[in-house]
Length: 454
Ligand code: ATP
Image 1 (spheres, protein in one colour):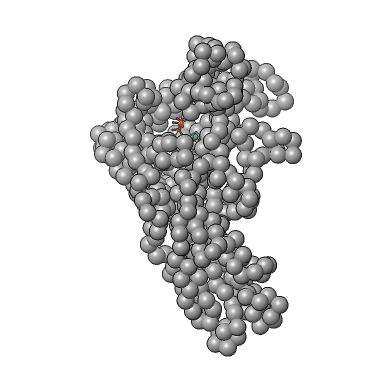
Image 2 (image 1 turned 120 degrees about the horizontal axis):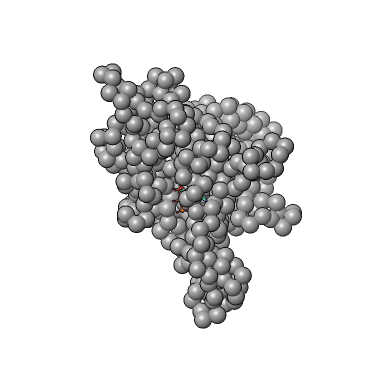
């Protein structure tokens, strides 16, 4: 097996996603809508696994975190109090020559509208305006009237829905600090320069957790959550050499944050934020207490009142999705054939196993393969594929990252065994058909690390 992978580009990932139906440009038949995407079958399955692995680590396997699902459109006072109406802005510059708009703090990632493409501001022809602040919240109206009184916003983060429910959850879920509230859901930002596939989109699915702690413990919990989250990304199989932590300096941090670190991934566009971990202090609960008149505080058993401080790990499914595909993508020559293989962690792979009758016309093979498929699909996402040569079927599964294929062949008819083929090593072994379910359950629980060199 010879690895022939060139450095992975975003275009390679976009084309794989399109070819195999992971992701399509949205509204394509109407010419699209800049940087908006729709997810096809394998994309949905991959997003589901990312979401459920996050939920498992952040809620299901913990005693101290509960779940919440708040509304997307909240009372607009929430966004006044949180500071988003006044300050959720990015600096925008216009180019008077090419008429494009850019984020002033990310000019190095943008391309000028003129050919050959340059960075904005790089040529004497570029005529950039002074930066001005542009609010990223999408506006909408609630109810039949379209005036100032009905103005509302699509949420730009899920976090505020958590803060405004602090009292409900603390009382009803009978939790005391340190405890957390976790939420997964769509957020919307009218990004000035979306792009780089799913990396920066206007509509994305955030996974955020707000962890409420006694003020004196905030620094220690900040370190704890940074380590936990980095470990979680490693547990998805992302290679160590592609992950790093970058601490924000004082100028870069939000005014309310006393510490923020980004977990960065080495995307094809360079090191970029995958997940942010912030110490938000008591800013949010204090703001909502002042604006709403409802005290969002904690009273300990001795009657001492305090406003908990908050540690927030926040990440989007989209940024994980892109990192996973970039990390996993490989091209190889096997024998005299080329293959594209996604070396995804088996728990992340959209399809966990394929069931393949070697000769689909053979009734004995077809019946056994179908029965095995029907047994396995009650427990895992598996695929039954009977079309085309067996080699092509293997390659189709390699390309979507299916870790194992169970093939029903002539020998199955004699001794009720099947072959299991391993996506990464291509090793094949035989298993009794009756033991496949248990074998797959075990295999999915085994430790896994990328066989690709770092
Ligand atoms: P950036 O500096 O890249 O704009 P940010 O610091 O504004 O990001 P946060 O507000 O900290 O991002 O959002 C938390 C997480 O949400 C990010 O770490 C990222 O995973 C995700 N995220 C933010 N904006 C987008 C977007 N436009 N598209 C996809 N994911 C996003």
